[in-house]
Image (cartoon, rainbow, N blue to C red; front, side, top):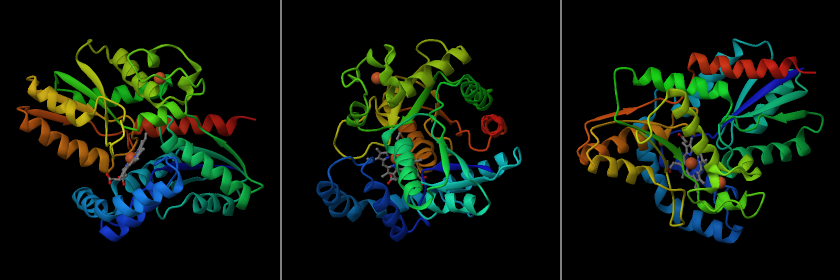
Length: 339
Ligand SMILES: C=CC1=C(C)c2cc3[nH]c(cc4nc(cc5[nH]c(cc1n2)c(C)c5CCC(=O)O)C(CCC(=O)O)=C4C)c(C)c3C=C
Ligand SMILES: [Fe+2]
Ligand SMILES: [Fe+2]
């Protein structure tokens, strides 16, 4: 029997510093997230980041936490239930970090009689720190614990026309009557080094004005290209005028160069330059989470108002939007009817 494992990033068990520390420790010790050799990574994460960040992150999590739990987890569960209503095969949900482990998710499917799994990382764009860390872990788990399980992965879906249509419809719906002067497409950032490391040509990605718009086989694993493509395709679909939309990258950590322009500085600049009414959409996330509900909807709005901006609209992620649930269900049912 076939089954599906949806995988999202994960959240701490509670917004308390102890749980946040445990979660951040697991997340940031992943060699595909902080990609420096083990001794240096442990010194940085355990010796520096985990000494201060859990308290600040816990305070941020407390601001967005829901009665039912972490928004990211609750929303992912709603997505799972929504999809389950459109298919007869079991749909399980797991998180890359935290208590809802991928191993438990695979076991849940196996216990239901599944021997063929569609692994569905809930990320529209490929990144070493997201999609790749999931597929690598699943490979390891399969070899060690589930040798008889056949597993196939869903690749990044950033440029699928039906995804672009659903995202564009959602943006249009949330912007009706808003008339923003500018729409900012803000994606989670990654260190520039991550892009270069996954350049299969070893020389294409210069992280400049042209590499990501020049056709290359490097783009299959270029997060920056895939983000810029989502912006371009949505702008084309919604017929946005040149100069009314921008792309930026948020949530940087540490002192290495990350993808630019940075979202906070872009919002600041837009406010300073006299934009009064702006909207922001975050297409690297399928579910609202700390990075959208706090960093964008709270901090971003505050920066914009401080700089003289007036109306700031945060467009929700696709979450359990009806069209999005139907789209993922359609892809899953196509896979089910294959072979
Ligand atoms: C080196 C650090 C990080 C990289 C690289 C990174 C990439 C990355 N992350 C997401 C999605 C999410 N990240 C979230 C939280 C978060 N991310 C980092 C660091 C890196 N992310 C940290 C330290 C945190 C924790 C919060 C904080 O202390 O600021 C979340 C939210 C989780 C939640 O519980 O709500 C998401 C989602 C992507 C898509 C990505 C690369 C493309
Ligand atoms: Fe992150
Ligand atoms: Fe590129």
